[in-house]
Image (cartoon, rainbow, N blue to C red; front, top):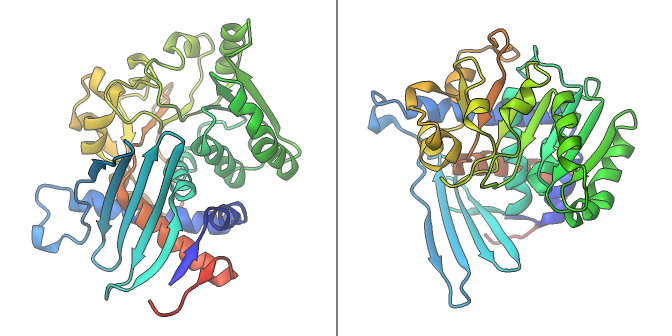
Length: 350
């Protein structure tokens, strides 16, 4: 049994080569294709290999929420256990072999952030018609960090500028040493900037300028109100890539309805059923299942390096709420890389 701590997992992800990252994307893409195929009404129940039971949630005496999320592809089984406490979120992913042996334990926070960003990258790298010079990231958590890291790893010669936008200033200042300086050292030709609403009198004016200049928007905030308006984007019209991974409850809205519908009739999602139930943007816009395209269906019809077709004048809109299968697939890959590179702790007897 192999154990990977949070620092171990972070080191593995930060050390990935572009080629290794594409291998991760390929593995995740295969899983998305499989689960989309099995979700079709005419798919025989007896042939289904992927099982994602509903999560179990209960409260402890300390008023913390404990969440259990099981998943299996009938070859490997995983259980993600997360505790949401007042001082933060702690979690672990358990990976079991086909015969029930515990193969590995992984700290969950970094894996969750990485796999969510990687899901965005499955579409990002195929949106070749979209320029990627200026990237705007809303949020200051690990998911925001990993969207920027992976975009730079996968398209280092296309990106010129990355700007992180956040309501609060403190978190951006904390990221200066741990994240931003590292990105500047790795990519000296890329300008890494921040914009905080707190303490910035001309915030709205500066945000408008960033929106007008950007080619890509990674939104990673559980915002109750849209982070920007469609009219702001249209003040400098161009085709943009827009991914939304922060909202996960009906009251949450990262963008307005006009922006959501700016994809030329296409809205890409990781899971139709999950997004229709959890995404406030889709619920408010009264989006139906027929108006959504699952990434698994899209990838299943493309070759390994095929680009997607983008309607003239349309944006690329992607909404992701996450699935347990993503944790299982990425968790297995991380264990493989960690074991091969000698990172982590191996424990005999399991």
